[in-house]
Image (cartoon, rainbow, N blue to C red; front, side):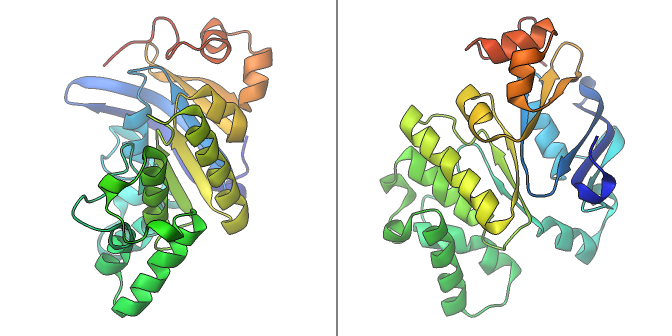
Amino acid sequence: MTAASDAIIEVRNLRAGYGETVILQGISFSVNRGEIFAILGGSGSGKSTLLKHIIGLYPPRAGEVRIEGKNLVALEGEERTELLLRFGVMYQNGALFGSMTVRENVRVPLDVFTDLPLAVRNAVAEAKLAQVGLSNAMEKMPSELSGGMRKRAAIARAMALDPVIVFLDEPSAGLDPVSSADLDNLIKRLAKDFSITFVMVTHELASIFGIADRVILLDGRSKSIIAEGDPRALRDTSTIPLVQRFFRREGESPEGAATP
């Protein structure tokens, strides 16, 4: 159990869904400051739903999410904005603006949330691109980038305001094994060099075993967490059949996972 003083994110008895459909119930876990934490599960298990609730896109049906001790859903005005600026998000497809250069894309959060002079905003964007190895791609358009480069640019944009947490939605999706491994190494380096807490939604086993410090595994049938801990230990020692099937096979989802 994570000590409260170490927890940068706390999810308590979360119940979530859309319309009449309940996707998740009784979800409780915490994320340590500075760790790489992964949310796992098969298709329809509620991974993306959980992420959207953590970052405040949707309010929970019950329970709460606290980031740095504050309940995002309960905050309003400047307090809510200040907390939102404490984290960045990289969406699955990168979500780069096709009509902007890479530097302009990374600069967007600075354009929206700061009054810094343009030269300073550009300098910050360039520094973030250097951190992800894209110094030579600043003037390119997103269409000119490889899949791996687009992911890196999206991470640079998520880091533009120096967040303490970066959320990654399927960061390795659509990448070849080499590009995926390079991205994993980048995430690991950024976490170490800049003391960033990374929370990623993924089903890529190589990434899970390569960089995740801790994980939770969601089950679509029970709508709950069925395993939590070091992914390597879960793979090697868990006696739960669904957990064994997820970690020991290349299949995308545990057998019997429900689809909402």
